[in-house]
Image (cartoon, rainbow, N blue to C red; front, top):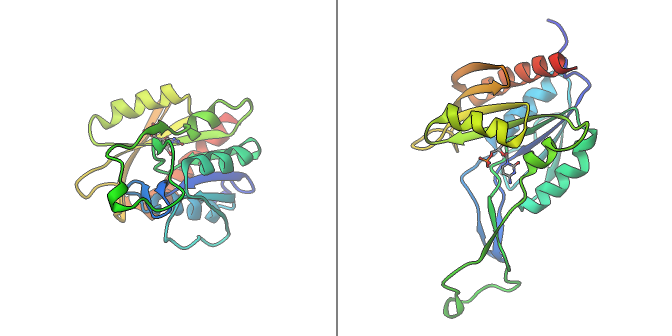
Length: 219
Ligand code: C5P
């Protein structure tokens, strides 16, 4: 087999959820195990890429040969990614980043008799969009987890974020999050490929092959 176009290239990947603290013991987060992103990191390392995995809170073990940077919040993930993205050849955003954070986190545990009945939220930065906006930045690959109109929404996201590729999948009712398999359709300006329903590890390997092809085509 021929060497992957990603062999020796620097590939930056985000994975997992982010946790947005309310106080030292509570957070707002989402249902992401990190499985898809960790599988992509393993697949990229397997083809010889130099992989840096920026992970939100996840219990998953670090794939062999992968450099891992642990973060908690979207702002920390943004900082960790933007520090490294200018040097990366490819950026794959597989993290399920919380769209909002709590405006004023409490520094001490909020007591039962002192609970606010409203939380004020502010939007988090869009990490993928920021990387896509870099001059001479990496090839950018996003995910679109959708419950409805998956392909239409994914296509809109490809354009709105100005990214090079998007992997679309259906979520909800046992699909997408916290499960071992998934189905992906990958879109880019001018093409698409159906990767079908299979184990996330297999999907990750096929996605990395496809990203390698697009990277080679763009080179
Ligand atoms: O806009 P939406 O969250 O649906 O887009 C999903 C894609 O954007 C995923 O690739 C996700 O990792 C990325 N994203 C990001 N930073 C955010 C929100 C989403 O990198 N704040």
